[in-house]
Image (cartoon, rainbow, N blue to C red):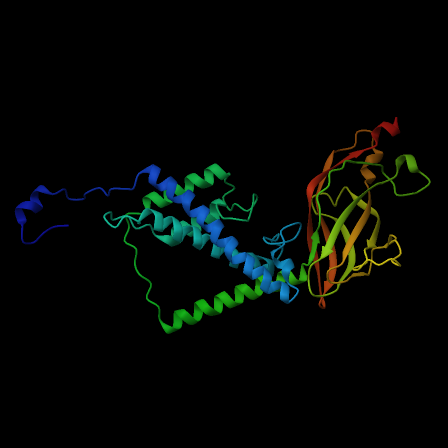
Length: 340
C-alpha cells in the first residue's frame, strides 16, 4: 500500500506486490486436521441426536445400512433431506481448516470459509457420506488436492465479517428448521433398513414356471428392519432401474419375525409379500425369485449385477418407492449350459 507521507518509498515499492501464500505443507495439514475435527464434532453431535430421535421412534433417520442418510436423490424432498447434514459437516470442515491456518496471529492468513465448504462438498471431502457423492466425480486423493488448493489460494483474501441483521437471522433460522424437518420426515417415511450384508451369486433361467426347474429362477434373501415409528405396508418390489429391463421378479415372499419371543412362539413362515405390514421395530426377511427372459438366447447378455431394489411402500399415508441398497452387489448369470 502506498504511503502518502513518504513519496520516496512509494517509488521504490512494487506496483502490485505478489501475495505470500501459506506453504503447501501447512495447507495440507490444515485440511487433514479440519477433516479429523469435523469427524469428532460430527460424532459428538450424532450421539445425543440419536438418543433424542430414539425417544420419538425416529432413530432410523441416522441408520446408514441400506437406506439411512445420505439417501439416494429421487426427488426434491430427498435432495433437501440430504442438503442439511451435508452443509453442516462442510461448515465444520471449513471452520476447523481455517482455524488451523490462521492460528498464528503473526501471519495474515485468513482462509475464506464458504469457498472451502463448497469445495469440500463438490469434491466429496465430507465425513460420513462415503463414495459416490462427489459432485465432480473426484477420488479421495483428488478431493484432498482440490480442498488444499482452495485453502491455500483463498488464505490471502480479506475475509469480511458477517453483519447479522434481524432479516438475515430470520432467513437462516427458517432455513435450518426447514432442512431439519426435510431430513427427519424423509427418514421417517424411508424406515426400512437392511440389517446385514451377504454374498451370493445367482444363476437364473428364462422362466418362472415350476415344472421347468432346469430353466427356472434362482432366489436370494434380504433382511430388513422397520426402524421408524409407523407401520410400513409393502406394496411391491422390483430390481433397480439399471437391470429392470432384463431381470424380473418371479415371486416375492416375506417372513415376519415376532417382535418378542416366548416359549409358545411359533416359527414364522413365508407369505406373499404384497400388502404385508411390517410393524415398527419388526424384523423381516424378503425372499425373492429372479429370472430373465433373455436367458433363453444361447448368447444371452450378461452377467448383470443387482445393487439396489425398489420397494413400493405406504408409510403414514404416504405412498412412494424406497431404494434399498443391498450392500454387496449380487452377480447374476444365465443358465446357458442347460440350453445346449
